[in-house]
Amino acid sequence: MIKTYCIRSIFFFAIALAFIACSEKKKEHIPMPNTDLSKISVIPKPLKTVPTNSAFALDQFTAIYTSKNATGFEEVGTFLAEKLKSKTNLSIPVNTEGNNTVERVIYLNQSDSTELASPEAYQLYINQDSIIINANTSEGAFRGIQTLRQLVPIESNDTLAPQQIWPVPSGKIFDNPNFAYRGSMLDVARHFFSVEDVKKYIDILSYYKINVLHLHLSDDQGWRIEIKSWPKLTEVGGSTEVGGESGGFYTQEDYKEIVRYATERYMTIIPEIDMPGHTNAASVSYPFLNGNGKTPELYEGMHVGFSTFDTHKDTVYAFIDDVVREISALTPGPYFHVGGDESHVTKKSDYIYFINKVEKIVQKHGKRMIGWDEVAIADVDSTSISQWWASEENAKKAVEKGMKVILSPAKKAYLDMEYDTLSKFGLHWAAYIPVDTAYVWSPEEYGIPVENILGVEAPLWSETISNIDELEYLAFPRIIGYSELSWSIPANRNWEDYKVRLADQAPFLDRMDIKYYPSPLIDWKKSDFTYETIKKD
Ligand code: TNX
Image 1 (cartoon, rainbow, N blue to C red):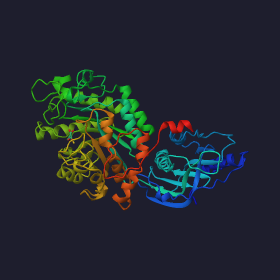
Image 2: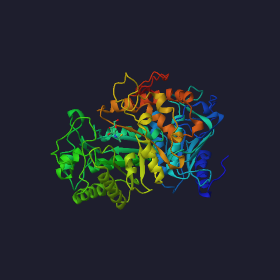
Image 3: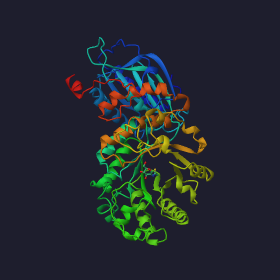
Image 4: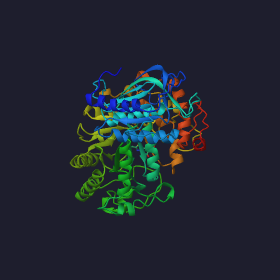
């Protein structure tokens, strides 16, 4: 059944099974309903699913074991135990030795199988008495447990057993992401969102295997991250937001906490400082930065393209060096996003000069530069990355330069576009994007050679949303579709099939208190879950 095991793994798995064998309690064979693994709604759709039409009985006699000395595996096991606890109220032990009540195991195994095609690949084997997840890395194991979480039914099943049982349908899943970069962007500049809000968003995104959160940390209306060497950025530039509300910013400790929380979920945080345009808040804080000669004032409107840094002053580059240095030191991920969009009042030659210089600063601090598609008009390196949002011409230029491209076409992937004319929030300058339009397009056939595509990212601009409920209304359910567009292969993507699986997400989204937009295109599954149900049992 399992082709390749390293000796060490077999050894520890044997120990796990020995716990069961030594168990004083006689193993009960509980008659399980015939559940078909291929009928369970998993998003994003795994590469390959093979049902074997029986089930694993998840119950109080289940334990989790992980490969010993395999970095991160035990933490992933603990994460799974916590999530299963909040779903089922079961307290499942992790790597507890001498536990003689164990009848069934979930085993997270570090495998060196060559069939695991990338660090995020995993194999999931569900048998009657064991569930095994094989992965090369703890990241792969983490992706695997997200699939497993989706296979655990929300309610326990009536069986002849005295204890509650959550039947997990048996079979095998082989999985590997189509694109390595599966992202979402959150604009915390137009409206500020608290650390708690961002964490809630990260937690749900990671359930759908999204592995990048790009934070748009500065814009004309606000500067949102503490820079110790330039304190007025947040004291002054962080005080406003769109519509005259009160603004806010992350201290460096706050930002570290977001990074920590994301890292625990195998998600990379990408910080963006947008420049040379979209810089009014910075220039109000330190007017020497401003290149337009006017005395800037705090801005709470929604216009774009009116601000620019002075691209010829050395002091401006010294400032940028400090900002990139401080933020890079707090950011373990490999990328730094420099914005570069809509610099309508920067002369083209100045813009090119600026991006060339800033790219070098980013590289000096050990990061790879990402910029909105306009940056490809500068003399950028092939190691830098272009994020296509508006201009196909710019995206093609990036390809000519050998750059990787992140696909975020506004017409298809902008989470701030209204669903339709009845939408409560959002804009519609690019398009109306109902839930089907968001899903029914193919990144592979969007005009960029597949080898140049790093992945897909769905940006959520926040001019029209000011709290987490409004954020969720625009992001959900569309972001779930973008996760499938970037994880699953084209042959596994189909709207008719997807819309049924999406409908089945309702109980989970309700349980997580996500205020998703109940699109009439989806026949949402009714959910009668309440936390009281769990407590009562
Ligand atoms: C364009 S997308 C922008 C943002 C706005 C957004 C609103 C991009 C790189 N620039 O500044 O917030 O449209 O949809």
